[in-house]
Image (tube, rainbow, N blue to C red; front, side, top):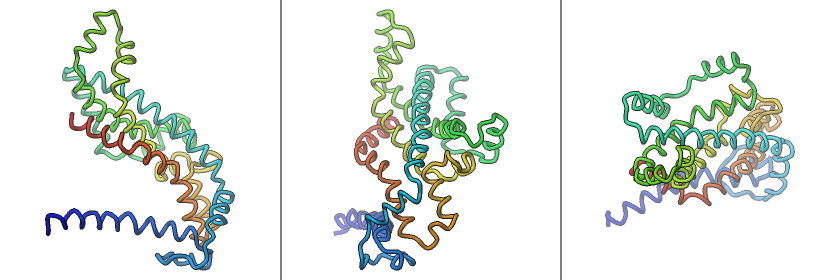
Length: 271
């Protein structure tokens, strides 16, 4: 019985770990203010999700925050993919000590956390503090190590004969990279895209120190500002409604591309 009960127990624990917080957020976002003063797992006696979500969107300025998040996340993802693919190709095909040292230094970002104070001071020296380009540079530097790690492992499994045949046909390095390497990297590119989007979309720690707020505030920063300004004081139904709406784009992306995430991680780490 333990053979069959062990998987069921694991699934039950995982369901509780994910389902209980999710249920708390969903039911609280549908409650009136009086019922949501103290969040609990009880279903609402009076359902008013439409009103709560409408108030969260309008009062929390979610449209502006959504646009700001897109203007930061999309360029960051593009830079991580372009720079990561190019660097991974070099690391996978070169075997000198200098390249090995550069690869070790690059993937060390997976283990070493960024120094926030140093980052903010450097951005101030460069005049990028409180700007979207500064935030894009921070996200690119933070997540480039992950992209390089997965892509390098995948490229090493690609037969070099494909590139040699292209060179015999007169193709240069740029053409080989664009016509052969990038198309084969689609599973890992999809994985890196989704991972970076998930992390950057919900980030509040680094965005708080780099952007600070104002007109360029992203969705997490905007939620923090309106909550700390006592606009949502004891209004947990609006806070949770804001969280649900903010999470919907990333949930949709994850559900659509979850198979590519698994295949990309397996290809990049195992091959």
